[in-house]
Length: 417
Ligand code: GLV
Ligand code: MN
Ligand code: MN
Image (cartoon, rainbow, N blue to C red):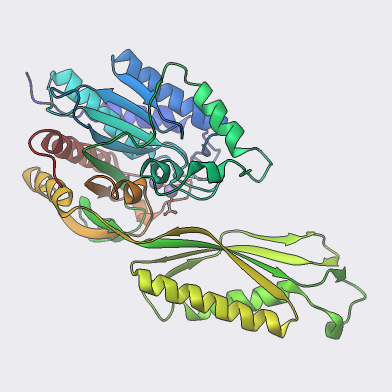
């Protein structure tokens, strides 16, 4: 048996091959969950796996698993991976880096003929991003039993495509995959991902050893006024929901983030009904993405949003409805699994710091059912959810080497708890 090593050239080529699936003119990818492009990426990964003699499985959420048998083939496997779906104007590395690096680990173990105690499985989770069908991290949430997937069956995307139909088509597109039960137990989970923020690059550190994930809440705010003629309706007769929405957004932007350096507030989507140039809208709807490492602060910001909406809408004679589209409390990873990653980084002499993830990840829900940790590598200027997202080849290699080292440690010996 030789020592397993990463084939960095092969991994770079794979990243390039997958970046062609859903490639955008600006150099990024549009490979949204359960789309034709997502199916093509899943097919390519499954074909690569079958060509190497690995077994391929999928569960009812189309989470895709690739298994390399260990010595104890009936023990729960160690899971490594990430997601293959992207934002509509996404980068080439968000998700793909962790999934393809995990597959590189299986190949490196296979190349070296290295047997592990427990089986090692690569996973590509379904719909991490949540931009086509909300919420995000659907596949891992359902895997962890934190949501009933039946609740999502009636969802449709912005063009009217049904979630249930797209899921069924995605499952049917991979007949080679053996069906397996949702939530089939695993002994642990390690996910490699880009930081998606600037701190590692700024601090010239190779690795972020992730100890947990901050909380996220998605609200959908609908402000309703009265539709009217743009030209004939004088100010005193207007109940304009756009004026109320502008007031709400201004008040929120002025109050939430400036007073709390850990708070994040983003309005990524806004729409009017009927959406006509020369009609006062009847309703304005916008999304709010709120993040905070503290569950209590997240709750306070939620209350602040409701108070501000109430005041601003009353001032315009409008009504408001606020729906919670997604509520993900902060999560803390297993100290033992975090230590596996930290010690592996020390053995490889990779500079690192411990950090909490600002982005949510599938690891957040998996950590509820198995000891979990994450590895971050820097990305250029901290830019992500953007077609210009870029990771230096040296960082790709650092991340993959560390994932291999941590995988070998976690798949052998007693499972971390
Ligand atoms: C994940 O994509 C996030 O929005 O944090
Ligand atoms: Mn991601
Ligand atoms: Mn993302």
